[in-house]
Image 1 (cartoon, rainbow, N blue to C red):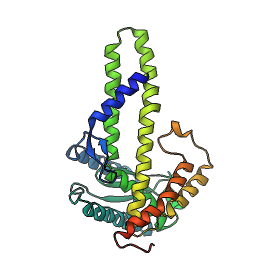
Image 2: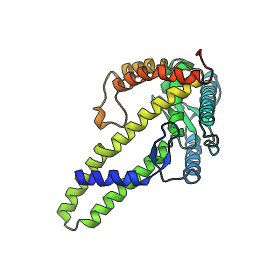
Image 3: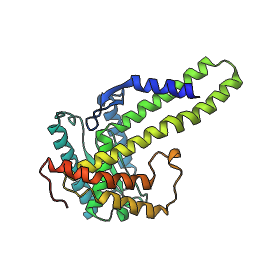
Image 4: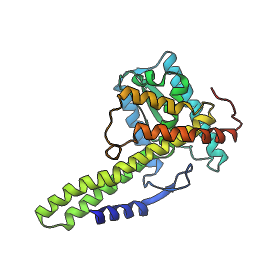
Length: 269
């Protein structure tokens, strides 16, 4: 199984073909915007037709306002750092959906959804900015395309193993071991790294937008309290633990404030 994981990791490295402007690192992404964005936009529009979108009221206006401020801050950062055309294919949209789920999510190309169930946790516009920064960061860093790329490689690894192994019993053993090993050893850490990256980028752009990044750790304290502290072990989860996120966000907040100073932002909402 170690050899399989190593081979899969090598494939991931070879497939890396795009640079994350916020980290300067090559990322696993072989789906161009021209291919993935139209699919995402169509899926987003379909989702909106099938769900109860909140189109009026203070909460809906706040979601749009915060989204616009944070995406504008991202564009300022990208332009200042040599990526002026990075967002040319993005079509930002921020929707509030009436649903009790404590959740928000992003799709490639800048499509963001907040559920009303997360608003008691965000509490204020600043809290919304924490979540919005995180979701905008997912879109900026092409995390959706990276997950698709990783999933494709995972499937190719399974197909290769099944072709190479002729003995049915050994093939069955391989499939069981490969499924668990590739998930726990590669896919889940890959997902957690995206969440951590989105936390850090999100702090930076929310600060440039004028929102105090100190709020991020406080929001995750409330999120932890909401969950009652119950969560699967971190290594079995797609997300870092609440405690890990709280510690990271508290440590990164001063750095985000320093980054905001480069854009003339010295006071925060």
